[in-house]
View 1 (cartoon, rainbow, N blue to C red):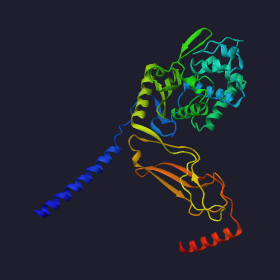
View 2 (cartoon, rainbow, N blue to C red):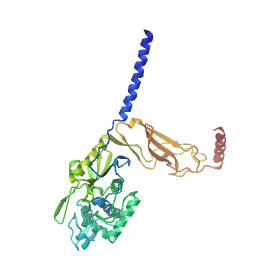
View 3 (cartoon, rainbow, N blue to C red):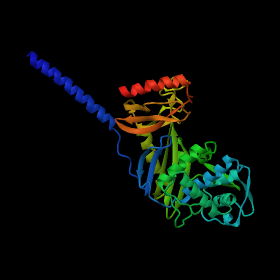
Length: 388
């Protein structure tokens, strides 16, 4: 009987361990499949980590309609931030701008309109007339400005984008992708935070005409603070939106839906999924000392190592305890050491899968030591090498 009791006790322990393993495994997998949207193309990314959470045909070249105006606005914001333009600068409205078809802010030929109002006309009212006016003011012509837009797109890593105009009106060879537009939205948010608040404004009145922002999510979800809508018969109804809840910001792009309501509804599905099932953490920040390895032949015995920029990672909710960090530091570090010099790699993994790698860099410079210090360390290194 005693033997049977011992066997039964061991079996209970074994099954308890198996149950724990199955429970942990189940915990790691409690994320449903992403929603399938009624759209030609879509993507959801985390703004800080850059991780793609959901995508479908995200690199398919499609007409972007008025989503084009995000790049138009970006170039205006860039010129303002560089000091080449002032928000109070006045732009003369040409005949071409005045006669622009489609959505307008209703500027008049020969009028002088300040940049600040034109930027609001582009972003809030989706004015084709405002877009052409700033394009001609900055580029000399809309065609030259569109070439600048494409050049900036390439520099941002937008590999599948080409602009032929500043408005998004249909044109053969005028295209972008959900992925590229998500990259552009992220740059707008990060590069010009002082100007980003315009994208959340619900109304703008110019020339006595009050128009509402076409982004319905600005009324439905207080966490949504941008960015841009678009529509043509060719492109369908499109929406680039961004929302921030707590410290987490998501960007969604939906292209080719059937209606204004559909683009808002499908975007809400993406954002809800991302916030519900994922979280973004900052395990290490720039400048934090992560290691202090020995420096051979230096004026000081060691050097402080860290990372250049804050490290953000996006993971399934509740999985933070399963993260591991590994520092791969160069085996031998010799003086002189220059601040910013790469000295190894930091790896962050979740259950063995590497999520992020960042260079480990010197946070300080270390000059060479005196002659006898360098000589002694060389001798020690020589014999250490023999022993290794």
